[in-house]
Length: 152
Image (tube, rainbow, N blue to C red; front, side, top):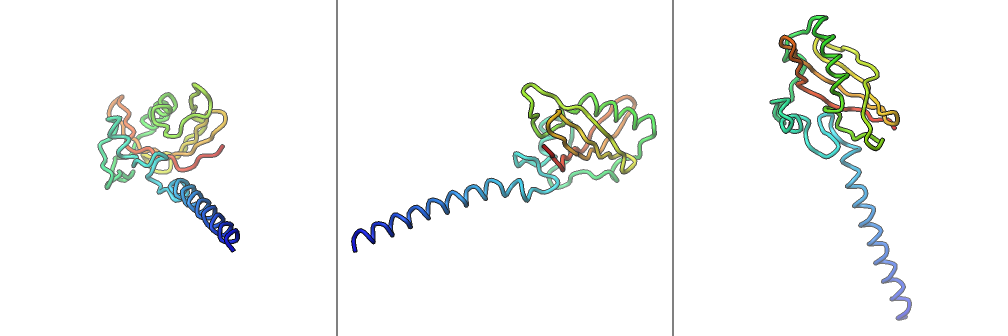
């Protein structure tokens, strides 16, 4: 009887350890699986990330929508596209999969008069993001940047 109890106790302890490991794994991955559109991989809100970079003054509770900004003219849209093409690595939230790699923009589509859906890649990962921009003279400002799809 004692050896049976020991085997049963050892089995229960092992099952408990496995259950804790599975629960920990699920909790660590739940953040990615159920991440909101406004969240970034390390759990910060995009507005907070932008405030740290001093490129945006939106707060966590009120991320700016494209309707909050005036429509851009064709020339300003070209400036925004050129700006995003040359500054994508400053806004990319997902790290490159290539050592010392960088991203390059592969497509930009305007879905409102001041917001784009763009695709960029490092050769291994392809990422889709939304960006809202304003232009004042020659000054381009990205007021909202949100990655929403990463494909490896």
